[in-house]
Image (cartoon, rainbow, N blue to C red; front, side, top):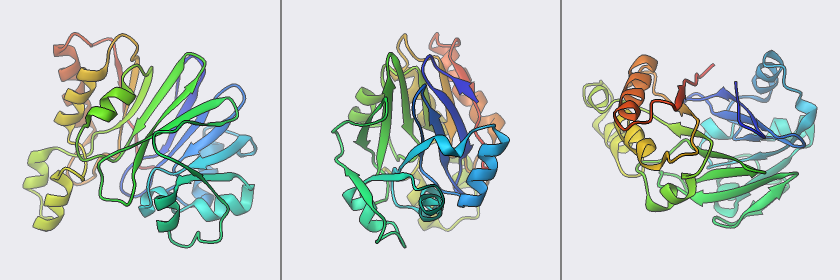
Length: 253
């Protein structure tokens, strides 16, 4: 767990088996994605001493099941609001009757005292987005599934205090893996996932004076490992004079 001046942040799950991020300000708590079961989400919140009764909403980045599995049951159990853009809401299986609150990419909206700016990302989903959350002077950027850095992502994520950014794979491990060639092409493609090296270069480019901490997210179990990802990013940041930025791991469990 980590803190910025106005946010508490806990990555409850990160990886192809499920993604879920808890964010809390002084007045509001919400989830970014709900890709593990409702029961497991609540169990992990309890382990982290987080109160589910505080949750006001779930914001969904895209429709893939590792980001949406727990939506329906969490809504049923807690009555919390659900937010997504129109294409994502239509694409999430089994939620056709849920009362979605729809946002438009590029247009900020508020949940309690948190302003949320969704922005499009290149990924093989219908309309995937990243988020910048702001509360007072605190800014949290989230981009967990993207095939390549874009100029828009650079503009949106620059100036954040805390980033949760994908570092999915090592390119050599992908190429040498036993995965089908079509899957390798998907992962390495412009709508796939960020490599350690690309994530490191991206961070060095957008860090500026404000960035204090980074969570490396969505690490592949087969084509990456935690030590390699941390070493690659920390080495790149240090060579760019940015060794003061704290680089933190995330885990599937």
